[in-house]
Amino acid sequence: MNPLNSSETFTMSTAHHHTPRPSAAASSTLYFIGTGAEATELVQRGLALLSAHMNKVDAFQRKHGADAVSKFRDGHIHALAYECEHEDAISRRPGLRYLDTEATGDTRYQLFTPDPRNQAGKAIAAEAAAIGGFNFSDWLVTALQARRTRPVANPASPTGRGVSVSCAGTVKGQLLLQVPVDPKAPFVGPAWLRQVKQSEYLAAQGL
Image 1 (tube, rainbow, N blue to C red):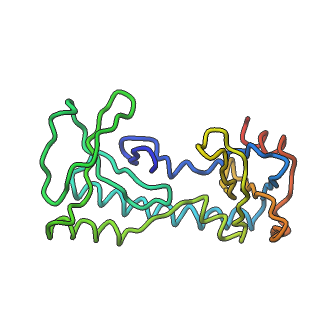
Image 2 (image 1 turned 45 degrees about the vertical axis):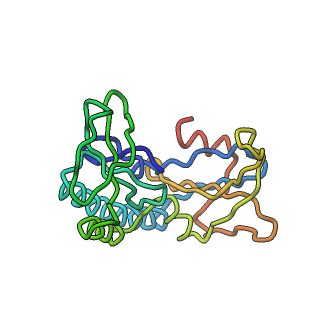
Image 3 (image 1 turned 60 degrees about the horizontal axis):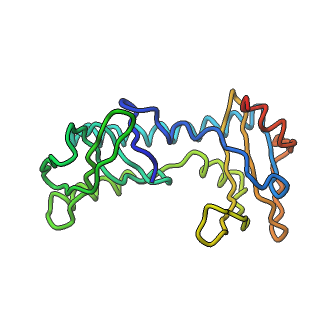
């Protein structure tokens, strides 16, 4: 689940997934930078879809009087969030049931999900489902046919294993893409997508 986010209250985590972070397994990852008219057109299409999605989310949030919205990584709505002063003072909200209390900075929020036990809750759930989800990075990766995965070591995982996945974004008009090396499915991008060293990829992000 993404952190609480709202176009009014927070810096939208979804809207700012424009900067893919470098993979820890740099030697098994390919890095690309795209510029020019084709890259710009693709980015603009993705941002237009993101904006349309966020407008729907904002309207949903306002309709239900929420202060923020909690979303899953894929952009689907997870819960409505309401500011609260005391964690133990759980408010009652028609069609919603209390899920948890989270803090963002100095502000505390109570999270509520649609209550499937009544018609009001089912209606709210249907509204959220109709909005769907949108992840800008995933959309770019799909548009570029660059979806790849690769098993990697992850000391933080209980199993010691993890998965590296493709991700993409945009910084200062440039399209950035990183793709795990998959010998069974080599990635070949469009001519305007230039493969670069990790150092140039980081420099493009100001890192």
